[in-house]
Length: 403
Image (cartoon, rainbow, N blue to C red; front, side):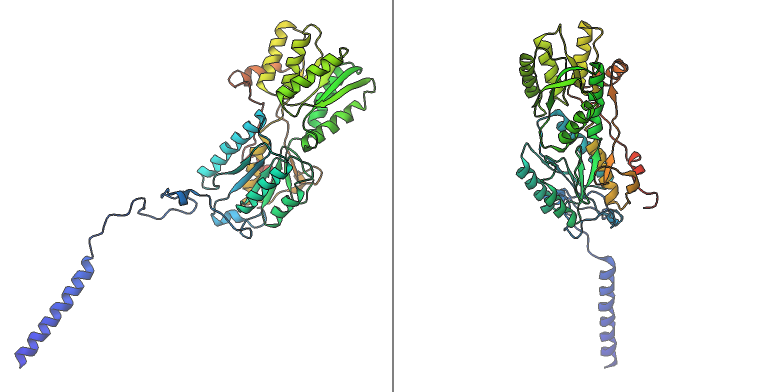
């Protein structure tokens, strides 16, 4: 009987030891599934698994969308910025969109932002309202809007603000509560070339005006500047005014019509790509009797200027840069705000006191034409607009030291 008990005890101990050995040895691991990683991704890093679902931008609910006051950047989440652009039929907007992508990639590479959500097409006010609504529905953290109307977007922009979305109007100023603006002073921009024209004419003569799209904020501000300057020159008569719709071909046709109707024209004022069309129309009409011309800060315009100098060494004009870079500068400002930095509103101006006024990067006259042309346009395509994009370090001037 004793032997039997000992045998049972021995067998029991063997079973316990076998269990312990199995637990220590473990099972041989199987191969990891495709796309899996050995270590978890660090916060803010791109996921290794590149399935379609993983590539989609991270969406936040309206309540989660950070503002300058929330300090959302400290959470490590990546931000999604939306773009609303209702006008694509110009080289300005093409350059603007590409520069937005380029600057956003800098932040994407640092794990700060996702891909831009871009709503960009030739459309009217209802179409841009739909663009904005699409961006709101996608729960973007900030919206950069190049507005197609002075007032018609305000209700939808305020809806975005109430949902915690940072809203920045770029290139054109809006007077809407809590909507920031980033751009040059469009009124002063127009005043610069208008005063040059008036002085070049000696304060008297007959001119025509070719404006952009009536109702667009930038055009409204510019034409206001033109009118204000010309009030000081009562001997300058405006023979006619028409819209070139910010289109080179349309500007050329309008100018051709003016030249046919007003053979006594002494000069003309226009803006952006229309200036190239107007210049070409004047060359075709009567290159011997050339009106005093306002040109554009674009390499193609400077090329025409250079060609005209070959025919008339005394020729001179003015080209005030209208930089597409204000939009990517606005993107940099938006990122800093999303990261929780506090805007120093004493540095802002504009109608609603929320405008980041960006300096005009260059004004070309006879005095610096050759230097600008040689240094900028020799290695750029004709469509390139003279530009300037503030660095991330440079935009820090608009934020308080303590964030």
